[in-house]
Image (cartoon, rainbow, N blue to C red; front, top):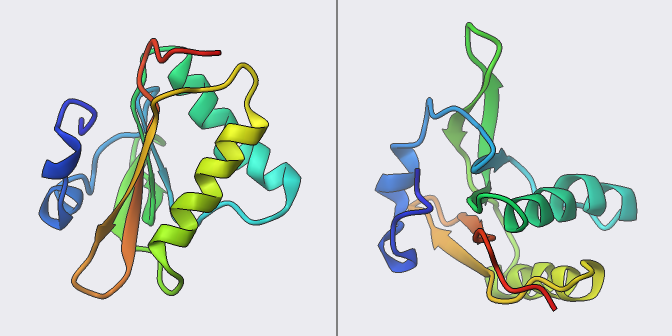
Length: 134
């Protein structure tokens, strides 16, 4: 799992090493960012972030294609990245969504873009267990 690795140590090689990793309560893979549709934002972004912050903590990675393995479990299938757009703008949009849409508020989470050699990026969202809620 990457939630035990310091934020600045996460790089493209580590991300590629996640291919084949099972998704579970502490790691979730998403190929695309949440759309601007309110239902999509709630289901695909806010619920997983809030759930992790309120339980064991973990990582949500955007830009990772998922698939089912032979046992029917969801696994990371490929590191595809998110193409186009400014990662800083995307981080700001997602942080604003968390700040204005989750009650009680999640304090101290981190979103970090990890640049890939293709020019795209993967976003790592880190809701930690036992995060202060206000």
